[in-house]
Image (tube, rainbow, N blue to C red):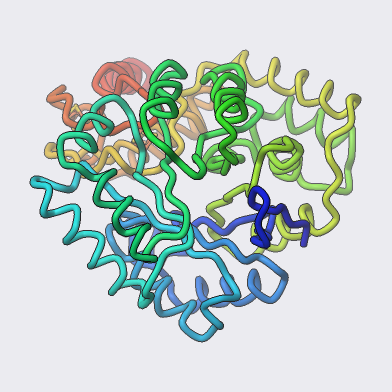
Amino acid sequence: MEQRTYKNTDISVSLLGMGMMRLPKISPDKEDIDEKAAEAMIDYAYAHGVNYFDTAHMYHDGGSEPFVGRALKKFDRKSFYLATKMPVWMADTPADIERIFQFQLERLQTDYFDFYLVHSLNAGHYQRMKDFGAYEFLKKMKAEGKIRYLGFSFHDKPELLEQICDEYEWDFAQIQLNYLDWEMQDAKRQYEILEQHGLPCIVMEPIRGGTLASPCQRSNELFEAANPNVSVASWALRYAASLPNVLTVLSGMSNMDQLKDNIATIEQFKPLEDSEREVIEEAVSAYKEFYTIPCTGCRYCMDCPAGVDIPKMFSLYNQYAAVNDIDGYKVAYEKTAESERADRCVACGKCAQHCPQLITIPERMQYIAKYAAEKF
Ligand code: SF4
Ligand code: SF4
C-alpha cells in the first residue's frame, strides 16, 4: 500500500484511508450498520495496509463510532491511526463540547485520537467553535496527549478557509476534493491555501458520494475507452491521490467490491499522466451537460421535520430525471413513501443550513415536486 509521511515525522499514513460514513447497512432505508459485513471490510483493509480509519460522532445516526471502537479493538492500537470529529452544532453549551469528547473516547474505546477534527466548518459552525471555546478545549486535550494532531474539516468558501488557517494554529485540514469540485466548488483554491499554510491535506469525497464511479454514460464511455482494465472510480481516486500535499484520500466504501477496487488502485498507485488528465477533462465536460443536484448523500440535512427523505429525493432525481429517464423516475418516485416525497416540504429551511454542498434544498424540493406533478 502506497504511504505518505506526515511532515517530518515517522508517521506513515496509507494513501487510501477508510471512511466510516457509508458502511454496509442492514436495510437501505435505515442507518443501522451491517456489522458483520462492515467488520469484514475493516479486517480486509487492515490486512492490505490501510492504517487510517476516519469516523465522526453523527455518522450512521451515531452508530459509527461505537462500531469502529469494537471493530478496531482487536488490533494493536499503535498500528493504525484513528480519526474522529467534534460536531460543534450538536453542542448547546461549552460544557457539551467536553461531554461529547469524553463520550467519543468511551465509544471508540481509546485513550487518544491520532487525528482529531473540528467537524464541517462553515461560517456558522466556525462562529460556534469560537463562542464555545472548542478550539481552546481541544488544544488542552492535545497538551494532555488525548489528541496527537488537531485539524478541521471544511465546507465553505476559500475566503473563510484562509481566515481559519490564519486565525488558529492547525496540524492538518480535510477538504472535499475531486475532479468535478476542482473547479465547480473551488477545491483547487482550497488545496492551494492549505499548501501555502503548510497544512497536509486529507481528501474527503474523492468519488463524490459515488457519483464519480459512474458520472454519466458518455463519461463512462470515455474512461472505458481510455483504459478498459480499470474501474471508472479508480480515475477519481488517482486524481486526488496524485496531488503531492495529500496525506490520505478517504473513501467511504459501502461494500467489499468497492474496497477491493480502491485498494487495487492504491496498491499499484501511478500518478495521473497528462494524457489521462485530458480524458478526465473531456469526461467533466460531458457530465456538465446534465443538470444534476450536487448532493453527496451525507445526510447532514436530516431529519426533516416534515418527513422528506432529502438525500433520496436528490439521488432519484440525479439517477433518472437528469438523464431524461422519465419512466424509470416515475416508478422509483412512486415507490417512495408519500410521506417522504418532495411535495411534503414546507420550506422551513432547517435543512439547508447543515448542507456542506450549500444546496438550496427548499428551492430544489419545490422544483422536484413541480417536476413530478407535471411529468407523471
Ligand atoms: S426545507 Fe423542506 S426539506 Fe428542508 S427541513 Fe424544511 S421541510 Fe424538510
Ligand atoms: S442535501 Fe446536502 S446535507 Fe443533505 S445529503 Fe445532500 S449533500 Fe448532504
